[in-house]
Image (cartoon, rainbow, N blue to C red; front, side, top):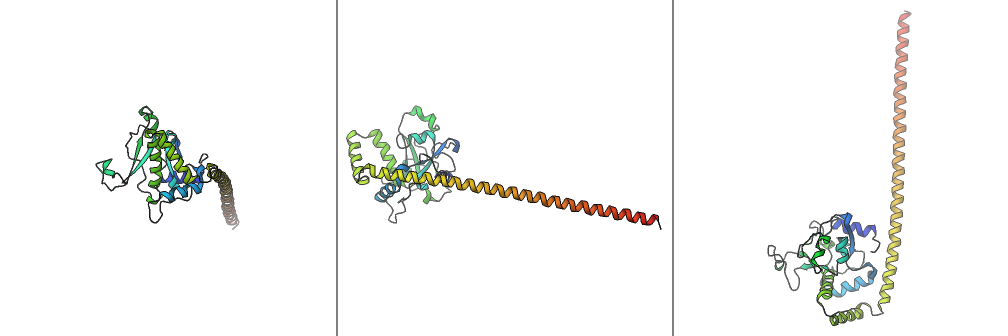
Length: 261
């Protein structure tokens, strides 16, 4: 999202341990990034993943643009370059196995590899992470929470086309995409995406208001409990003092009684 909702950021951040999956930089420097832009909306991402699905059970089909599977935690520089100069390749795939990239791993071991196609002088801004490094995916996370390969492959193909493709190929690809995803014109899905974005903005605002109301209620409850404890403590203190005073008075009376015996 352009204005990130708490839910999307928290879910993506939690899965990725609140560190950039490429550079390892901490959450202070990072954004929760939509792989498919959130302005595309739910209709687009469902159509996109359904058409490219490789899973007979359809497990790689995403119906919600705000799904954690459509997100990555990236530092601000990687965010700006993602899909342009930066892309992630998942192996094994139809052409390569993981040992082709790193001979020390098993060919069938799942691996995410980061590639940088831009000027190497920008490396310090990325986090001095060499191109070809393994992406820091959370191995303790449920694999079904990872982005499906079809999304990462699409971004990777786009980066390859941008850097190595011809103008003719770009035009043909754009025309092909338009016929499939924008049969009613780009404005149709753009309008849907904008409506979806506005709906999400309202949901985020409601979530914030609800969270603030719950926080205020919890604070009031805590204050009430504190005041109750103070009242109980005062009553106990008064009882102890009264009991002590009673004992003192009884002691004085006994002493007086002995004097008159």
